Each structure stands twice: as structure tokens, then as C-alpha cells.
Length: 109
Length: 226
Image (cartoon, rainbow over all chains, first blue to last red; front, side):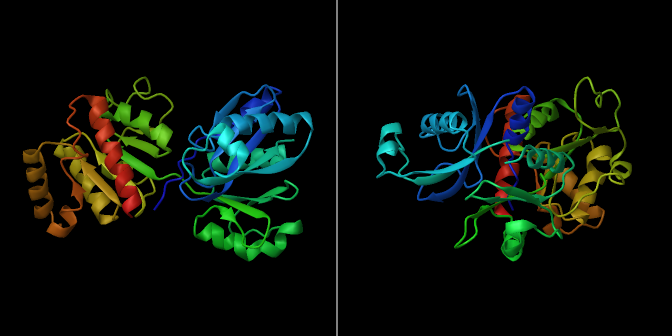
């Protein structure tokens, strides 16, 4: 059995929107190897780069925040990003766990 | 995601409706799926796969597609007997772990909203209280009063309904006496052995938050064993 262990991130997303913030949802959609967060883990980011929740153990959050801000600036609906050990950007932000994750970004509109 | 979809998700969560979010990763469109409901538009051809994900309570991408499914299940119900000091810390832990807590305590001076803000306390004896709380094999019981008058009827209910976790506070001696009483009431040793008593994993602490931590740790561990 598993509990839902829902982190109330989506509730928070709605609260942010109600205060006129632009919100991007970042969701872990795939994992390979020893990734720290399971599929469905989520963080939210606003146009100022404020964020809540997580998609890894702190390894890639900085890069995700940057990508989310770009998504808002370019006014794009969605984007998929992958973080791999062999990937340069992953080295840059330090995916120390050795796992790989795919994160899906989508704007709430 | 459309804001209307987000609002529906929040609504379903607060009304404890189980559902799934289905997202087309190509264009960002998403829909909320509820059991028995037909998916519309581009999603309709994935109806069967979405249902399978929902049944197995899994999250993931449907094979050979760009459709991501995320299932939301109802939180596990945990009944606490006794609105005591330890219960106040259990409520705190349960909030971050997303257990749904109900407290039963017939003693009005314990069961006050001032001690437990934002929580429904059933100020009745367990036999009466369980008439208004729906329970099943996915429910957990934490008995904290160590008063046989209050704990015993709740433990009997939990055993009869086959709760997946049953724990009772009290020393080894208290627990021995409790087991003896349950035996006299007709419960088998096999049933009685299902009760975690003395409750909690061995942490060594004696303060209320430490005991609460040892109880919640045992509860999480037993949840994953099932």
C-alpha cells in the first residue's frame, strides 16, 4: 500500500495564481537509475524565480527554475527537459546521485 | 495546464475524490479523469491505458505515447483514541505525511478545539463514534488513552474490521492485561498479536513528541509492508 503523500504543491500553485503570479508546474515524468524523487514529484516556480517543492534532492532545481523563468518570458505552454549524468548541463548543476530524470514544465493559464 | 483543470484538481482533493490527471506532453493539454468517466478529444483513444494506470495507482507515461498519467489516491485514514498530548504531535506529523486524522475522545476537557484547531474531534465513546466514521482494511488505529473503558472497545472494532495497523500505548504490563481482556472477550491470540503494543519503534525517547515520532515511524513502515 502507499499513501498519497501529497505535498499540497498544487494547492499552493492556485494560491499563487490568485495573487496574480505567473506559475509554471515542473513535474518529474520519468526517472532512470537512482533518482531521488519519484515520478509525479513536483515543484512550482513563478516569474521571479520563487519556488516551492522539489524534483530532485536539490541537484537540478536551480536549472529548472531558470528554464521555468524562460518559459514564462517566451510565453511557451510547455517544455520537456532531461537531466542526465552525461549531459553537460547536469554536470554543471551537479546531478550527484547518478540518476537521470525527465522534467515536464507547463504554464498554468 | 488550464486554470479550470487546476481548480477541479483542488476540488477533487478536498472532497477526497480519487482521480487522475492526464496530460498530453506534446501540447500541454490536460484533463481530469474520474473512475467511470469517458475521456474526450485526443485522450479518448487512451481510455483503457488510463484506467489501468488508475487501477494500479501508478504515475507514468503510457508506452509509445506522449501521454502522462498521474493518479491521486485518497489519504489513509488514521483514528486516534485519546485527545492527549502525544496526539497533538501526531497531528503535526500527519499533516506533512498526508494521513487523514480523526480523534475520538469522550472526555470533553481533552477534546477541545482550542487544543486541536482545524481538526474534527468526535466527542463520543468509541462504539458511538465508529457509527459515524467509515472504516475498512486500509484504516489505522492508534489507541493512546491506556484506559480500558475507552481503548478496548476501539481495539475490538479495529480487530473486527481488520485495520492494517493497530497500535496501543502502555507499558508491557498494561499490554499483557489488555491482551488478557481481549482474550476473555473472545479474540484469538493470532488476532491479538496483530496489535503493536507497547506502541512505536524503539527510539529511546520519553517525551510526547518523541513518542509521537516513534508511533508515526511505525505507522509509515507498516503502511509500506502491506
